[in-house]
Amino acid sequence: MTSLRRTKSPRVVPFGDLAFMVELGDQFDPALVDRALQLAYRWKWGPAIPAYTSVVLQYDPRHDPAMAEGRVARLLRTEGQQAVAVMRPRIIEIPVRYDGPDLDDVAAMSKISVAKLIELHSSREYTAYFLGYMPGWAYCGSLDRRIVATRLTRPRERVPAGAVGVVDGQTGVYPFPSPGGWRLIGSSDAVMFDPARERPSLISPGDRVRFVPR
Amino acid sequence: MIRLEGAGIASTIQDGGRLGHVHLGVPISGPADPFAFRAAQSLVGNGAEDAALEVIGLPFTFRSETSRIIAVTGRDVTVTVRDRVPSWTALFVRGGDLVRINGTERSRYTYVAVSGGITSEVILGSRAAYPRIGIGRVLRAGDALPLGAAHRGAEDAGATVSHAYGDRIAAIAGPHADRFAPAEVERFFAEPFTLSPQSDRQGARLEGVAIAPKVGELLSCGVVTGAVQVPRGGQPIVALADHGTTGGYPIIATVIAADIGLVAQRAPGETLRFYRVERDEALRRARERSDLLATA
Image 1 (cartoon, rainbow over the protein chains, first blue to last red):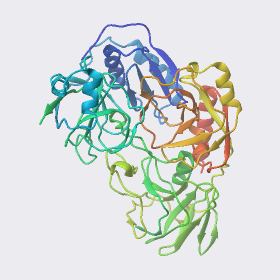
Image 2: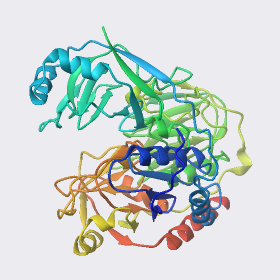
Image 3: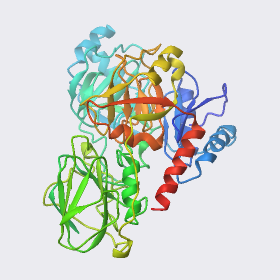
Image 4: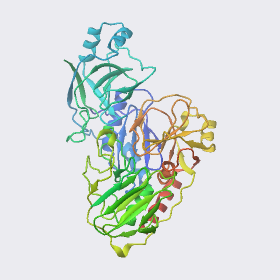
């Protein structure tokens, strides 16, 4: 999980008075996701939120906020200088019933059979790029290119917990009932997030994810 | 222990927030009006980790089992303990006295701090409630809430903090200001916006001139409290305590930490205006606020 190659220098923009947005690029690239994750892990001065091509570094005002800018600069200057063992990705298996209301539509859009769709979705290992949107929601990718799924033009008002969705090369499992615009191909009994568990989120950023048909 | 007799409609226990699980998509939560919360906490001698009550829906009434120093802060709040007593002030309340808090239609978030703090269960490193996913719950009449050992006594009553809720909100441009034409950014900092009734602890929803970004959506990125997101349609949303940790709408500006409470406390139908500041000015204002509380 360590990528030592340095690409163009990041753009650092103030994000209010207590955070900075570090933009690593503007096109999706797994290498940038990995960089964002490593920067987030190395930031020790407050919460950090990694995403596709950026990381938001929040600064706990109990430290001297006048120092924040220098600490961001230092973090970026030392990027890639040591091969930090950021985390050990785990393999998370998620049992899925392929019974989602959009299963036929996605197969039709992809011009493949339902059986082939299930095979393609469940036969590869995904990377959990980052978590966001709601607790325990992991953006996982990338889908086999043969799976074509656009966002619903009218998002559902309520998607049940455990629904397995696909959209634009990505897949994920809804941890809680919520509105949602992803196409639903299956459902799972896995508890994606439980505040009472020692590891509240089933998936952590950087984990490898497999869907197991049942 | 304090016992609630009238609990409001969506009141919760809050502390400084749940900072340790943002990377798992867990909102920070904490008070919607951080300055009013901190003011109440410092008046009773509580620290940053102590928990207090955020009251939504007045009147709110409770009794303390034992004598305690308490403080009530918020917008347009009045406090009665036997007689009318001041808000934004350290009050000495005797065991068994009924404390009654009233407000007006402009009161949105009211804070009740009790010396020693509310020692409810710590979940994921914080006592801040986020009932949406079962972290804590909305308070109910009859709830008995445990307290920590008091930090201050009767001799500390009378200290006050003064605070006014204005309608001019300081914001730093960006981080996505360059995704808007300069004229759109100018309009954002010039035009008044009206608070929508759909506003809640997730976000203050604004209505006014439509602000058009050059691009509709971005790849999702992290979001902080105060971020002014502009969804399709151009009606901005200011992220408050329970906001989602990531979002895909361009962020035209970010309200400075010192002014978040001014946004949160605007009532539906009221207006506000943003004005532009740089980071140095924001840090100076934050220091002023901390100094104000240090002497409370």
